Image 1: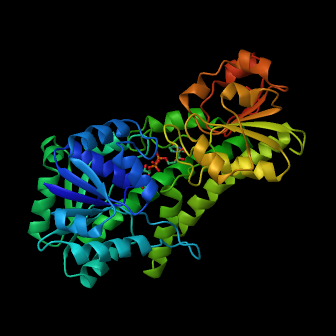
Image 2 (image 1 turned 60 degrees about the vertical axis):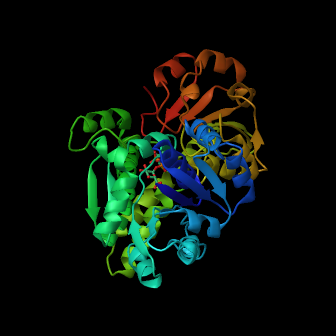
Image 3 (image 1 turned 45 degrees about the vertical axis):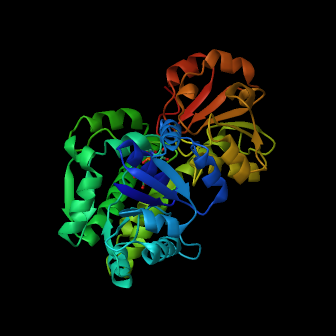
Length: 430
Ligand code: UGA
């Protein structure tokens, strides 16, 4: 089929490359000249495993092209996927729908007769119906559940497909688009617009709630001498609870979970439904960052003023160069404001971190960041940090003190190598 993908951020670039991989002819549209130039040259505009390879292969074969022209996209596509961002509004907690609205408006104006416009962006419930009323073209809603770091795998083999449709024709078209995925046995939920929109916000809210639940348990563990890692392990054996998303630590960040729970609570309140517990989920999450800062102060004898602090990690999670609402950089920037001498290292997110936080110090390797440090903060659990040798690391630092903000390091080894070691939610002493 001939598909277009409007917006080539994480979602759009991945969707476009994966649709080409499924055998479709795809045109990706973006108005950002730098991003277009990278994509046209067959390069991925951000770090995502396997994505660069797919983009290179399909731009070379001609199955995947990029344009800035809505006219060209409209003339080309049978189905148009809208994948633009819905950031948090500057003046409120709700979602900013300006990009979604202008993308729908522009593609609706240029679309061929009979084309289907499919929203994939995360939007407040009610948006699809409003857009369908505002434009003469047919609309469907098909939320996306991909995780950064697994975006290609999650798109080619999703754990479910959700289609919000108003007509059998829209369903038929989307079943054709996803024919290969459905043939592989992927569960399909066909539903109305409102439910399709809600599946996405409900899923992210549930995941955020799970993380904040275990982080609240970490607070109780810290107060009572319990160990949240063993607690999570024991809880996870109960299949009704499950092990996933029970890793306690400095909390969730990124471009999705934090803004989605705020937008959802905001939208629910507009509808007269009080989702106050999501504000609590948000508050627990932010308190974990405060806790790392409190531990940093404690480690440095009450104040971090003038202390050399090495921060391991800048991305909001491993296998990503995304620093949006990154707990690691938020902690680093706040310690810098408190007068600490902060040096950050991340395997992939250095360029993005430097641009967003130009006043922090940066190192070219973990070893360089550790050299002369009086305190080490482990804030993004890249595998290479887990593999650091605590004995060699101890020889590099000025004072062997570390806070494991992700509960990913082996406390016994680090303590055996002479480190003052603290992990969120674990006892101060073994
Ligand atoms: C999240 C959802 O997992 C995807 O299903 C969804 O499609 C996506 O948002 C989206 O809305 O686009 P993502 O933001 O890529 O995906 O990252 P996650 O893997 O969900 O992690 C989010 C944050 O939670 C990270 O900062 C991570 O470090 C943290 N986390 C995750 C924990 O602190 N503990 C855990 O046990 C799991």
